[in-house]
Length: 402
View 1 (cartoon, one colour):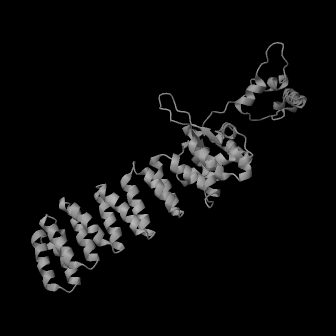
View 2 (spheres, rainbow, N blue to C red):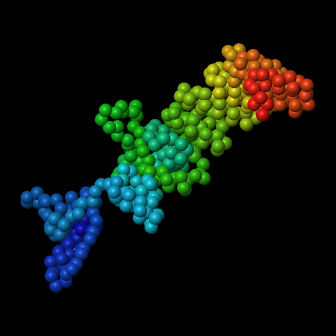
View 3 (cartoon, one colour):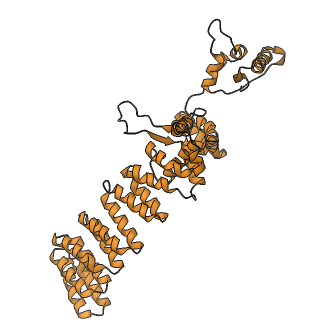
């Protein structure tokens, strides 16, 4: 079929010979089966305007009336049948898992072409593709802002490659990457809002699914350039910065992780504050961590407060957090009182812990009575343990001693 598409004498001669073969009853039965994308079919079968040259006369006579249309996507019945047969061919399994909206045929045909287009891309286009690959691999969502890609791309180019780019390199690169391939999306295509949906402030692009999977397999050990991290700080949506911060921290990029957490604080302040404080504590930068702990506590979330107290208690800074918990306890938060007793006991400050256990009991939380009795037994203070045990029985019945 490819020879026919060249509009050459060879293509027409091949079409004529095939017509002769199919019309010869002495050579029957003969089946000629081929596949064509719709654009190519229209090229070969379109009737020319009167008076104009007809480059595909024989091809059109061969094809017209003998087509079997292939649906644009597999139906639910087809997909179930595909699942049954997929065990025989791993390529079908992969296509079924990754093809969009049941477009299995397009995915199988387009995937190798996408990989070839990426590998043979000009420098500018390739830099955008790899920036998109790494942004997705690090945790950015599928909608990639153009400003992010443009800012990150120079880090994927050598000085010579950068200097040799045309002034309109970005436009050229976007056009190259957007070209559809065999019925599938291009390498990097612009996301078009549907009618009635708000348009974003700037264009957003989507990386082809196949290339995204390819990058996870083949780029996971590569180091992303600083331009990408800076672009993520400046242009990634705040809702995605926490995931990106995790990716930075696991790669030892604490400064970048802190910047990303600062960006996401408006969306998930408690989680961001906890993460940063914990990372700084683990890195031995306690003075900086304390500032973040203060901010977390000021946020007023009890979970954050108790988490901060436990982390600091582990590094022998319990005295620093006691005023925080006292502040919560003053608000009659019995959970804060309970945690204070537990942390003090863990720090071998049992007498102070008993004061807080007493306070919890006075506030109606008698569960610490039994706990206090157990701690006193361990400390070989049996007389006191008996008194606390009796109080536990009186408060909760004989099951309090079980």
